[in-house]
Amino acid sequence: MNVLWIEDFGGGLQAGRNVLNQMFGGLLSFDAWNNDSFDLKTKPSYLNEFCKNEKSLHTIYLCLNYFEYAELKENNSIINKIDSIIIDARLDNGEHVDLNKDIPAPYTDKNKFHESAGFYIFNDLIHLGVPAERMCFMTGEKNSFDDFKKKCTEIHMPEPKAFEKVDSSYNDLKQWLEGQCSDYVKLRRGVIEGCDFLKELIENNDNNIRLRSFIKGTKNGKPEIVIENEDMQDYLEIIAQFLSSREPGTINHAYRLFLRALLHEWESNINPDETSERYGGDIHTFAKLAKTTRNWVAHAKLLEPLDEKFIAFMFLINMRAMFILPLEIQPYEHSLLCLINSSPVDRIETNELQNKIDDADKLISQQLSTLDISLKRTTKNDKEIEKYFIEKVNDIYIEVTGEPNKNEYCFKDLLFACFFANQKNNLTKLAKNTLDFLPTLARHIYLHSFQRPKP
Image 1 (cartoon, one colour):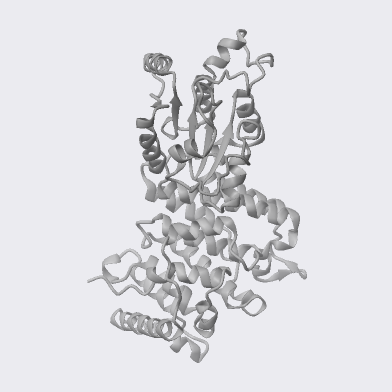
Image 2 (spheres, helix red, strand yellow):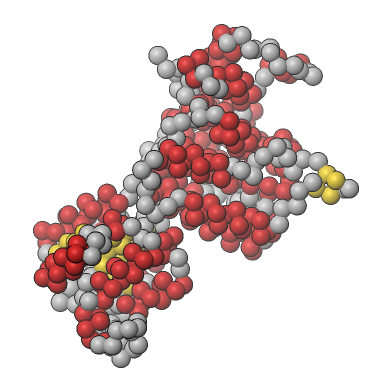
């Protein structure tokens, strides 16, 4: 979660480890914070740099006055960059603000403007589309805040949340921040950070667009479809903007639409088998799962109810299939992996995994037989009789579409199992306890896979 903190450290408020622990200790540890090294009053960026150096899942951006907020807004999309906002109502500390600089029109009294600049910022953020429930005030000016709250009620503005700068309120603020960090917010933040990373990746090297190699067939010696860098930039921008800052009331519907947008590129002219030998089994697996899920969400709702863990999984493997990424886990991937499972298994035993795959395959084959569809599909070769796990699951999906009572399985869990089953010729790679993406993903989804049929 990204937090914007607007505070001028007036009224004697200290800018050291104590206040950071009081306000943000529930999100990250400040044990490594050195009061003598990090002077927030001279360089507020020390705070977000500290978060990054600590490899925290949360980042706190500090602005000392209205002008620093305006600069942040000018250089960034606040609605995309920030998840929650804490505002000090009074931002007139002359130590950090040039009271002679121009202020927004039509205001003319500069001193008075900065005395209530936090209220101006709150109103500005509302106009930018930031939900009021994502913002709160942390102020020592209780009387002025009460007046502002009353005015908001009178003009039917959203009622803001506020905490006082007293010891008894800091725990309440911590609880508010923890409540802001829902699974939806974690997912949205991971998606936005991922899209930003990938946009930069392909901007620096156009050859990092792997999706081109999945295109099926040519026309006049050229690919049937030409995928330009601009196409992928637009695609990533759409995905980054798709999940709103306000958590939808009908979350399942929002996730269904998001999945369809995410996997739209895997339509009929894309063949996941094209790169199975060129890139290796893991990329083929990612592409196969993306293509299969795209077909499913377009024709049925047997994956529902959708949840953040499954959406995070599909986002991760989809982007690994579409773009050429380093083997190592990227920061956005780390946050989404933690969303799938914050306590992954320490290691995977290959013998145990092989037994789980074999057992799952037997159960799927038994249901194929029960549904009397084991040999319904025509085949051009003998391999169809001994079909791959994912094809067997797909056959069941086709058969029970529209009649979910026929099926005994959760298809989300079966897709996790398909990941392992499709890697059965290279299980030792999954068992490696390294920081590479493939084995780390395996450890995070292991407990979600191979679920027994529902009773």
